[in-house]
Image 1: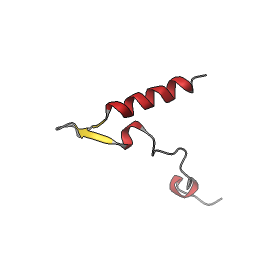
Image 2: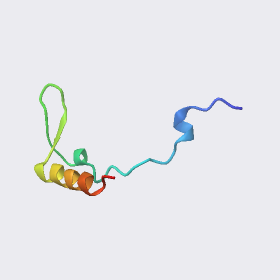
Image 3: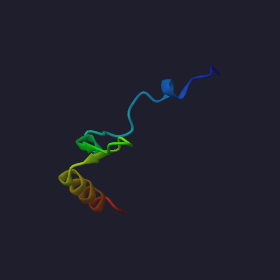
Length: 54
């Protein structure tokens, strides 16, 4: 069996990140450069999680 890297095996993305809360960055923290999403994006993400809980 050939030695394949993980990059060659998983070519399809597992999930779509277009709708992720961090996809629409409102600001960045100055020092850490952590993305801060808008309040609307956080609300949408929370609603999605609440609806999709098992």
